[in-house]
Image (cartoon, rainbow, N blue to C red; front, side, top):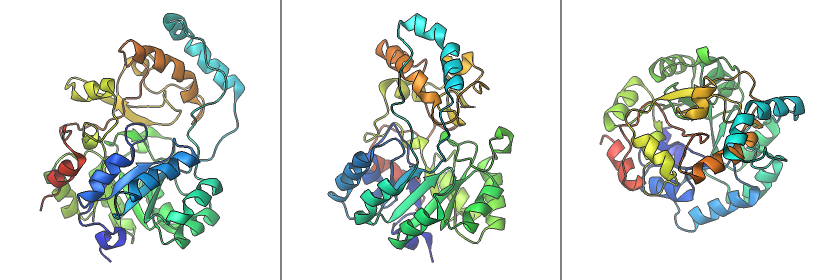
Length: 342
């Protein structure tokens, strides 16, 4: 079956879910253009997830994708958290803010409570980052008729996803912005350029493989479709769109042609690609003393708020892929149509 038929879309373009910089409005614009809009749910409460779906479905009958994290939550390592706060102590002093107490704003994995809340909607597409949920939860999602997508950053991860029930694999090239979907390895050297990853996955898998990472033009889309990918997933190019919630500071960094990206673990404890800023530079982007995902982000919260309050992005995760030439300050509907090489 053609991937557009599987996903219920007109053109094989998927908007990458981008937590923190978008909501249902961006997803709606992409879906209305004939692509597949995605709603990032990994940082939302159950009630917020429901609100996002209701906001979308009240305005459109087009398909949409709900994206969730499915990591295993490690136990709280108090000694690691204490050491991390000590690493950041000079920054707390500089901005005259105390280290945070408690654990607010954590990224939580997909679970039965979320499934209970969204079951009535029978979402047409659900995608996962960091592998797949438990077999029981996955069976439940599939019972709704939802197409299940998940991200692979290596060929081995793609094979695992196919074996364990994914309907479609998203090949996340190393060029892609935001969190790496790595779940079988934490080795940065294992991460491949998109062209190489796509070739390997297409040779090994029998299910569709979507190309993601560094896609900024209709020529890029055409080339990847020609390579054998039945669809593409685009994220960074949407960051300046009218419907995006990208902050003023983040938008400025994206527009700055001199800014460069790197993989870093300092914001969350997992590797993610973003535009280099002060804390990334100070800690050499990948810091061995960062607590496990998702706990690292808590200690940075007050620093981010304080710095942003004086117009600085020193502690802000400025997620971006390596290619920003496709960013346009237009509606996401228009950008989607610009990306389609028809």
